Length: 223
Image (cartoon, rainbow, N blue to C red; front, side):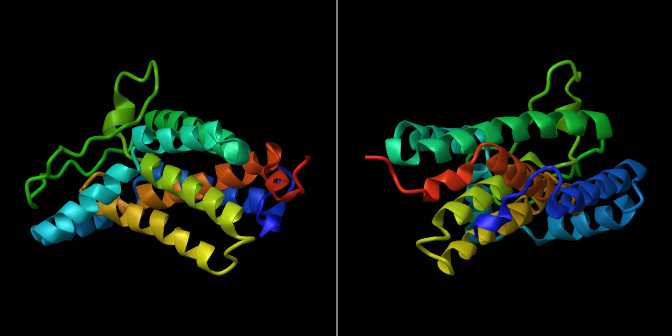
């Protein structure tokens, strides 16, 4: 699994960057917006099962930056996982700020549909952060910060656990998949938003982890 990290001159870097730029162009052009609006209207009508609604709500809230940051700080405090925590913390901060400014630049509206499902304990709200954007990062949806952060979390955790659990570690990829679904289900994002966020998260995780030498966690510890 150590070969999934990549540098600036690598093929994965070029491919992921190209795909994200293409998705960004599509978002700006709004060429898929009408079909996505129709899709979201159908999603809006599907809510109403309390068990599913609350489960999806818990899932989507787990991708909040204020949930994932404490987890990375805990890893940072523990000596054995300090490098993992440091890299995860840096990635979460970078992705949250970057997605906020990209949203501000692309300015693609969120679905803005009324939630017709069960009453949730806390209203689902955006958590984008960007200064000098006049609040547009809150009303804009591309790319999804939740999708980006969940993809980063999955990438780092799969990499870290791949040596001890070479097969089971890949199950962690279900997290960003379900997170993307949850953001659509709670009517916070269109499908293109979460696809763009996931690609951006993987791109950042692979490159930054390489630059900050995440692979050194597999080296023998000095006594």
